[in-house]
Amino acid sequence: MVISCPVCSGSLHPESSGSVMWECEDCGSIINHSQAAKRAIGKLSDVVKRKKVGMIGVDAGLCWVGDPCYIHPDLDEKKPSLPKEFGQTWSEFCDILWKKSPPDKPTVAQFNYDLGHKGLGVCVSTGYGDGTYPVYIEMIKDEQWGERIKSLTVVFIEDEEKSSKLMSKIANKKKG
Ligand SMILES: [Zn+2]
Image (tube, rainbow, N blue to C red):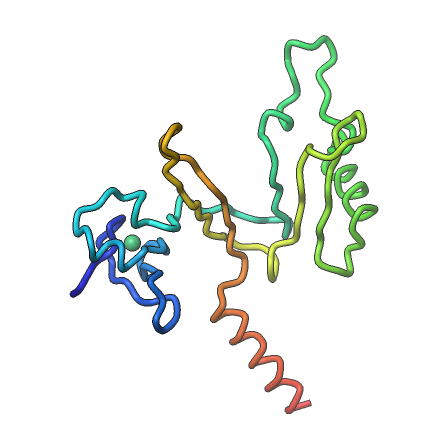
């Protein structure tokens, strides 16, 4: 039985052999194939495990995860300012970031509220650097609250990309 992607009608291929989770070649959604087969016109949330919701562009090799309400200065305040750990300029931000996470290693940095506790945001470096990266969500259907977003994933390095970069590294080593 051929089942096309319920999100975009693209073609599905299995995540791994024998897997019930199939990935759409066109939109990157992960579909529960056996569930989709059982109920040909089931509810989307029952069969769509992962859904591509957009792309993020990266120009500084960094990705920020946090609530956007902390980034905008509160204009109701007399002297609006950004949280201390943001710094007031980009270069101040970078100084703070490199203190938290040395630039010679992959960046992983927790940013704190002005009172000193965790929660302002998290900053990480993005795979091999700048580019445009796909964003996926996982949905659940809660009996009481209805559809909810369970998780968000940004993919910086596709599995094939990783193996092809590794292969070319090995090939270059052999040459040298
Ligand atoms: Zn699709």
